[in-house]
Length: 119
Image (cartoon, rainbow, N blue to C red):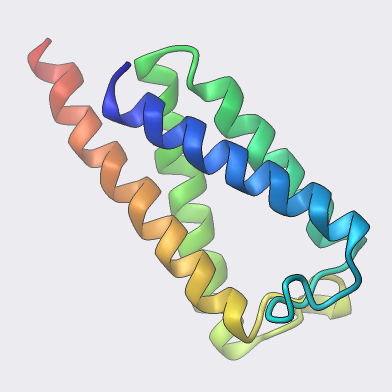
């Protein structure tokens, strides 16, 4: 299994578990991350999308890039607006988590693009 598929699988499991755990544990999740039901649903959807994406290298590259860019944008947005429209708390420690996750996913997708081009 290639790098993008592996990263999609690992991040998919992590986001899926975080989303499901958020429904079970009271906020803040693990004492650090403010979550609510909508936030948990978003984590479950991201996790499921990444797990689906691991089925092929090209899908993993595209999905890692799209979700990576989305998480980077959310991380930057949260610096200025920690709870957009009062719907999803994305400030605090979530900023660093989203920026780090986004950087890894987007970065790995760039490596994957060159791997696919040379294959």
